[in-house]
Amino acid sequence: MKVNQIDISKDMKVSDLIAQFEASDVLGAGRVARATDILANMIKDEDTNVFMSLGGPLIPGGMRNIVSQMIREGYVDLIVSSGANLTHDLLEAFGGAHYRDEGKDDEELNAEGIGRIADINVGSNDFEVFEKEIIKLFEIISAKKPVISIQELIYEIGMLIDDENSFIATAARNNVPIFAPGIIDCMIGLQLWIFSQDHDFTISAAGDMPYLSDIVFGSKKVGGILLGGGLTKHYTLASNILNGGLDCAIQITMDRPEAGSLGGAPLEEAKSWSKAKCGSNLATVVGDVTIIFPLIYAAALDKI
Image 1: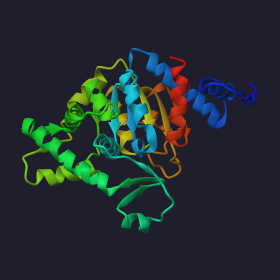
Image 2 (image 1 turned 60 degrees about the vertical axis):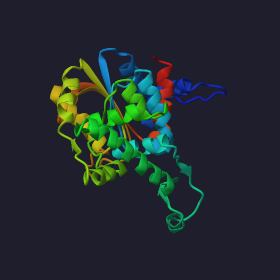
Image 3 (image 1 turned 135 degrees about the vertical axis):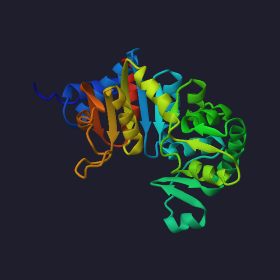
Image 4 (image 1 turned 180 degrees about the horizontal axis):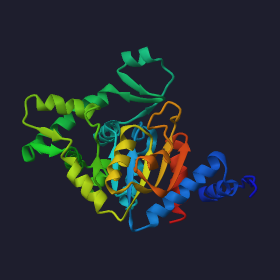
């Protein structure tokens, strides 16, 4: 079949644009169209539990409301998040914000108490509020559960947060579990360590596994939305080895495959490890999650 040229018209919807990508069906446009179809199908299929992994600075990068909306709509059944995305979600829940870059160099930012994530700025004042507020939550939770799994800790935090845009709070109220195997590697983890110095409070990473394995074994099918790479991607894939691998998945990543990193590995590689089933429907899209996923999700909504 020939490559169809892409046509653009005034007032076309996002789904119309993706339909043009599908008609072309090559290179990045073709991959985006295939990922859109996979996403729509996994959301529509009542027998598929959808696992979403959040790697990279997605919450400070503007994805917070999208994740929360997908949880509220029942499009996501389980989340694996980096500790950083949890931290930045709570930073906003506690009244802080993320700011656009104003062109200052990093030494100027340091002097003003501002940390930089690419072209996103975060103020130390907001982190000071975060530190005070998270300790208050630890006080409440540790009094009730001195030994707790990571997933339970995130759930308890979510139930104490009053912010409808918080994906942690939204997940807790909709019984969508959040796992964060790397939680110690973020400001939450630092505050946990500080708090545990004079409190009897133990976080059990292994405590997550019985609950996670029950979800995997109890799923007829599992679909994956893998945003970014690294630990969150691997934890999502590896958890499904228990049941032969993912049935379908999309991956959006900026990483390259040549160095052998997991983040850059095409999803087909997961079949060799039984992290994705042979015959599973997979699509890897190379690009910025904050550009590509909103396009894919918006177009998928028209197909649901």
